[in-house]
Image 1 (cartoon, rainbow, N blue to C red):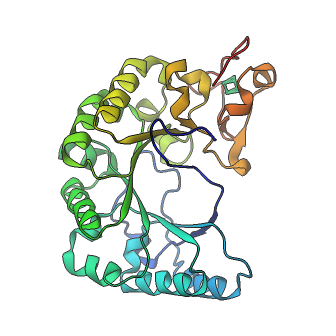
Image 2: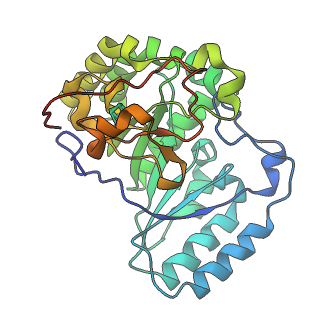
Length: 302
Ligand code: SF4
């Protein structure tokens, strides 16, 4: 795995536990390109299942990921889940994918993190430098303010943070300003992950915003990554096939698409950089999508 610029972030295969709390019937964010739209099912039984899993796992994984839905909607029960896994698997690193909004509440942030004998990695999506942009992408008024306050509360409680942003059209249009904002206001984040959009779920219903070829946005990407580097913030690119990027950005790209949902097109078989490439999502359809894979020829060093 290549390094992330000057960073130390490593993408690792991980055992993942997913939670879909009951209140997902009324989610507190509704992102335009959500790859797993909420369903009207009560999945709260998965919490008890998680306790069982923690107890019965024979070996401790290196890393365990929690996502949803929105895990923070579990409220105090999330603390119990953390404590269960920390007790049963003390050496396992934990990360959690959350919109961070509920962490704007100091009391809840304390209930969740105060005295917890573990530093958790928080993967928090942020889609812009201003409320109109972030709130539009997540389709919730007030989300930007809450997420920023949540991020500050995480920092105050010495948590590790990865900011995540999905590269859809409105995000890319403001990406350089967004990265300036991060450098000035959120310099404490461990890294920023810029992610190509997964062509599934709500992204298919919002093609005009989500279906694009990153080759058309090279200037924005290069400028933005340079800005983050100047601010000494690590950057990673996820879900981005190398042929969609200028070669100067290849060093930031990670093979982040899980094996079970990754594929390569026939033209990839003779591509010089296939071994270093993330490939494309299994649901990519070259007849319907703007981005086309383009075999890279010759001897190339990634
Ligand atoms: S042609 Fe295929 S293997 Fe080569 S960079 Fe593009 S997606 Fe990756």
